[in-house]
Amino acid sequence: MPKLTPQQQYNIGQVAATMAIEDMPLNEKAYNHLVQLATGGKTTDQIVEEIKKEYQNG
Image 1 (cartoon, helix red, strand yellow):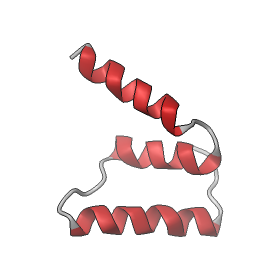
Image 2 (tube, helix red, strand yellow; image 1 turned 180 degrees about the vertical axis):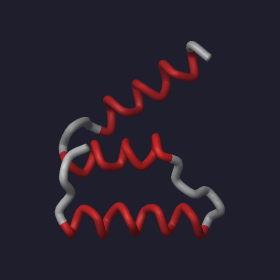
Image 3 (cartoon, helix red, strand yellow; image 1 turned 45 degrees about the horizontal axis):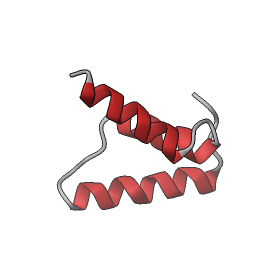
């Protein structure tokens, strides 16, 4: 897992808090996707394609 800067940690924490308020807490997979986005490991489009493939293949 890449090391996050304090700002990246804060940003991910804000997303997690917002999701929890909406009664949709982050699971480990969603958290990992956010880390990949924050650190530049993957783009939004790459993650969306992964999710689409996952649900298309069941």
